[in-house]
Image (cartoon, rainbow, N blue to C red; front, side, top):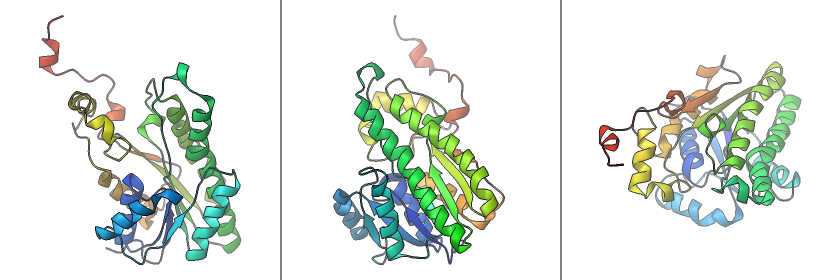
Length: 268
């Protein structure tokens, strides 16, 4: 079903994981798509093509979104517009996290996390929004947040802070850009399988603990984000503005899950 026919999207951080799944879904929904990755991500994209995950005609932009700031993201935006001047949808997915206790955290870890997860998105969105306003284009923006913008982890202070900022940015950009006909929403995945989360999920006990804290008991692949992304960018979501849709199996609404009975009977 070509619900996004005649639309064109730029998806940052789309060489793997959630970004790649969103890019695939937008292609299947009829949109023209421009992919993005770091300069070192060429091999990931070649693998995606070899597995028939993406058409050979989909253009790729490689570039750093953090250095220098703000010129890095501006250069990436201009490269994307060069390969497809008709971009009217922006998906800000590129991001990073580092698992590090707060008392041991180096400032540069915090700084780089904020640069990629927040500052680069600010620069990209402003650049595209200014262009769309000048051209009278009713653009569509999707920011990829995280359940960590709602629920915190003790070794993810930088990441949690950045995703909380994305929640606030989604709301603020809505009220700033809706009068110009630009629609801004967000999607916040819960725990899903990606190259970044896979190492933790290799531990059976850790995986069981994560499943326990998800009401539907599932730690899915990144493909679960596809439908929500297509919906939020489609005409079906025309009157949805400034919302962060959580795709988390219910994790964010479960205050205190009960441990399984066998855990309660362990010797003390």
